[in-house]
Amino acid sequence: MLTNRSAPHALVVPVLTVADVRAAVAWYADVFGFVEHVRIGEGHRAQLGLPSGAELIVAEVRPGRRVPSDGRSHQILLKVEDAAATVARAVAKGALVIDELHDWEYGERQAAIDDVFNHQWVLTQTLVDTAPEQWGGKTVTRRRA
Image 1: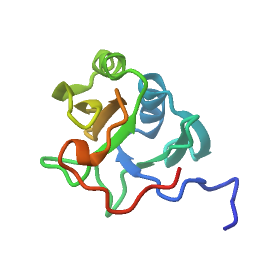
Image 2: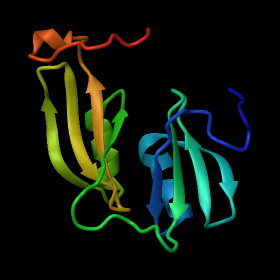
Image 3: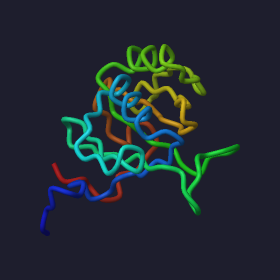
């Protein structure tokens, strides 16, 4: 598969519609550490990335594309080093905590927030490597290492 310097390299990239692309770029950089890779116009669209290789696009509102309203059609799960610190940064920048931090039997510490653009994020910190069978899950197909 060819790569293109003008397009994201990840195979799956969420595109989040926001009312203010430049504000979203700044917020996602300040709170989550995203870096802007490609800017398409001042307010049209931006491609962001993390050192881990995760990528995200923020895009302007336009016909057929709007910011989320009541209810959720999606959440974005983001792996972080320190969930408590990330939640604190997000709240300091105006995010709303939807689900408080909780340590789960499957080895993750998680919280859910609504960012200031009304997108919901699940922030997850791995505490321990746990086989799905240890907490009632089932391994169907093993992931590649």
